[in-house]
Amino acid sequence: RKRMVSGVQPTGSIHLGNYLGAIKNWIDLQNAYETLFFIVDLHAITLPYETQQLAKSTRDTAAIYLACGVDTTKASVFVQSHVRAHVELMWLLSSATPIGWLNKMIQFKEKSRKAGDENVGVALLTYPVLMASDILLYQSDFVPVGEDQKQHLELTREIAQRVNNLYGGRKWKKLGGRGGTIFKVPEPLIPPSGARIMSLTDGLSKMSKSAPSDQSRINLLDPKDAIANKIKRCKTDSFPGLEFDNPERPECNNLLSIYQLISGKTKEEVAQECQDMNWGVFKNLITDALVDHLHPIQVRYEEITSDSRYLDGVLAEGAGKASEIAEATLNNVYQAMGFLRR
Ligand code: ATP
Ligand code: MG
Image (cartoon, rainbow, N blue to C red; front, side, top):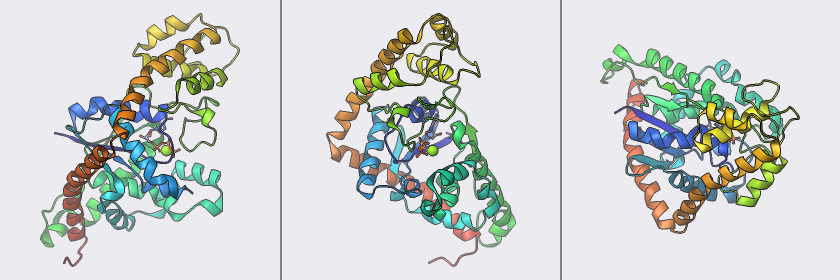
């Protein structure tokens, strides 16, 4: 079976963008692929963060995966920092990653500009190398990527190819290795729709955990009245009716897309249903749809978090399975790079 990996940072509360752009798609993918889903806690420290919150957010994120339908009989769920090989491989990969490649990353430019010089650690720049490590360790065939991660996946592919060229093949064989390529070069899996959910307060920037205003996003665990309140106050426009794909109406397009994805209707059905609606009517409709969709997830979340031993067990088992695959890759890389092994 083809293998696929994906993860979310425990940087804040999981929102509709993470859900529709990533987690919801995993539920189908776990049937088709061998899947590993991790909580990328090591990525969460690339910007200033709250030490008192990290462990809790990590557990909560894992619980959300399960509540959304990740099935541990099919998928491995684990915490990135529990598998040491992620950081180790990252160091080896950094030596083969030109700084120029990292300087070009849009997310680094955006996040560093927002954070200000004093808050930008080296790790924010080298973050994509850790992401490459997350993927390449598992010899993944596919990585589902939202729009915002396309550039990072492209970088992962370039790093993989570079390491394969530098250290793989005959040279590796001479060192007693298998020869051939060290890393599989992963392909992106772009979700058919919902690739990019936008902020509720600005239809031109993406919904994000790290955006300062909570009004800009619907969190998966938001109670009913918070959802209603956020939708009531979200940015709209004063055009008549509602429509998809009008570049002058990014908020309208975003809200219709969200409604479409959570209601399970087709774009055409939604376009027709909503074409003559005013905002008031539509806001009630989308609020109800969101509440209905998220309620069962929230109930399961409560069940899962009420038994901490269960979650600990899931994470321990996941880390165990992941470590086996990761160690094998890491050993190959050390060998191919010519290290003296213990
Ligand atoms: P941060 O602001 O801390 O970077 P984030 O909201 O971007 O948080 P990540 O943990 O970086 O969340 O991303 C987790 C997954 O969610 C990734 O697969 C990413 O592509 C996806 N994702 C994040 N934001 C969106 C969005 N607005 N629309 C669709 N997918 C998204
Ligand atoms: Mg992000």
